[in-house]
Structure formats: C-alpha cells, structure tokens
Amino acid sequence: MATDPLSLTFAALADPTRRAILARLADGPATVKELSAPFAMTGPAVSKHLKVLERAGLICRGRDAQWRPCTLDAAPLRQVAEWAEPYRRFWMR
Image 1 (tube, rainbow, N blue to C red):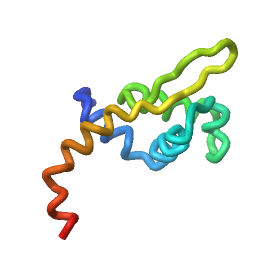
Image 2 (image 1 turned 60 degrees about the vertical axis):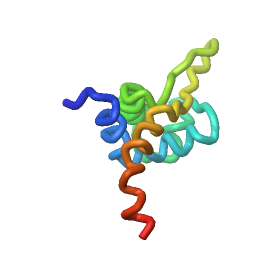
Image 3 (image 1 turned 120 degrees about the horizontal axis):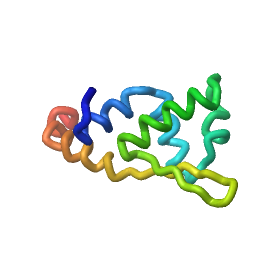
C-alpha cells in the first residue's frame, strides 16, 4: 500500500464517489448524513470513503457539540497540480 502523500491523494481521487464528496465539500462543511444523501449506499460505506479522504489529507473531520462536520482541505491537490504541470504542454496542444 502506498504511503507517500502524492500516491495517497491519487488513490483517494481514483474513486468517483470520493471525487463527488470533495465536490460537495467545496460548497462548505457537511455531515456524514448530508454527504450520504446523494448516494445509494449506507452511512458506514460513506464513512469508509471519508476515511480514505482523511488519510490522504483531503478532508478534516471536526466536532462542534453534536455536529461533526467534514470540511475540504485542498492542500494535497496543490501537489497533484505541481506534479501535472510539466505535462500541461501536452494537453494544451
């Protein structure tokens, strides 16, 4: 299993459900229940996706009384952009 930060980020982004969760979190914090709503999966299944995103550093889970919001942390995406930048010339043709 890969443990370097860039590999963890790419692995997290490889799944369309996780990308959709990140897109939702780009609009603001959300609970697991809110993040589960658009998917035909259980809360525990969404929680597994959240663990992958959290391990990659793409989300943070907080605690505010009874509310446990998830928030986007896009910093690892900067590494992806920096890695991809040298290839920009190929897709800009």
